[in-house]
Amino acid sequence: FFFNFHLLSQHNPRHHFALLQYQDRTLSFFNMVQTTSALSIFLIATGATAFAPLPSSHSINSRKATSSSPAGTAIRPIQPTAPQLSASPLEVVDETTSASDDAFANYQATEEQTTIAIKDLVIGSGYTVGETSESQLLQVKYSARLLGSKFTAKIREFDIPNMVFPTNQSRILPGLEEGLQGMKVGGKRLVKVPPNKGYGDSWYRGVVAPNSHLEFDVELKNIAQTPGEEFMMKLEQFGVERAVGAAACLAYLAVSPMLEKSGIL
Image (cartoon, rainbow, N blue to C red; front, top):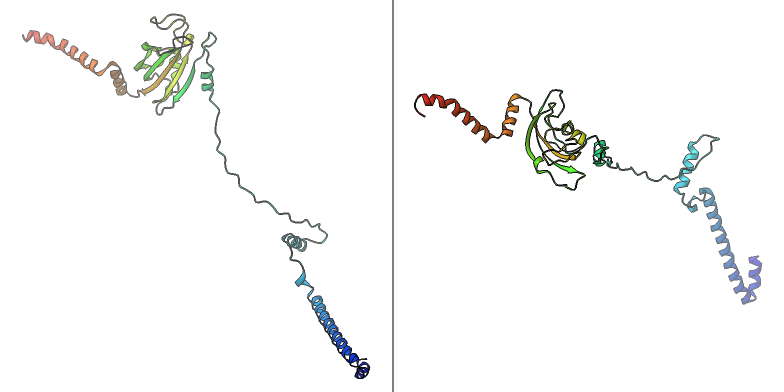
C-alpha cells in the first residue's frame, strides 16, 4: 500500500507530502498500540496490585479472622474496642451516727424520759471504768447545768475541778455513775440524767428544783490501780497544804504533854 501510494506521489508533490503525514501518524499509532499492549501484559502478570487501594485495618483484621477460622464457620468482623479506663477507688465517708449520739440528740426533758443519754467528746486511753466488777477509785472533773429550764447557765455549786470517789458505793448520782461506764482515762463526755436517776422530786440545796433534768460535762482524770495511787489521789483531793497543816496540828497535840512535863511549855 505504501509502495503504490509512493509511486503515485512522485508525479504530484501534494500527494507526496500527504503520504509522509499519513506514514508518521500510522507509525505513531503502532507505537502506542505496542506500548499499551506491553503495559496491559505487565498489569495482568503482576495482578495490578500496584494500582489497588491500600487495605484498611478493618479489612486486614477480617482477612486474619477468615484465614484462622475453620471451614463452615461464620466470620464476624472484629469490632474496635474502646480503651478500658480503670476506676479509681473512691473514699468512703461514713456519715452515720452512733446509737448513743442519736439518743443524746433525741433526749427530751419530760416526765417520759427515764433513761440517761451520753455523748463522747474525747475518747481517752488506758484504764476503763467498769472493766472490773470490783470498786474503782475515780478522779473526775465535772460541771452541770439544768435542762428544760430558763436557767441554762452552769450551776456554780456543781463546778467541781477535782473529785475522788469509789464506784459501786452510791457516792454520786446513780445516773452520773451509769454515764461514766466505759470511759477511759483522759476521756470527756456529756451525760444527760433524768430525775428518776438524779435528785428525784425533792429540792437539792435550794439549787436544783424537783424533777429537774441535768446535763453533766465530765472529764475522767485518773483511775487508781494501786494503794499508793489511791493515797495520792485522796491527798490531792484533800489538798497538800491542808494535809501538812493537819499533820502539824496532830504532831503538836502528841508532843505538847511531854513538853509540859519537862517545863518547856
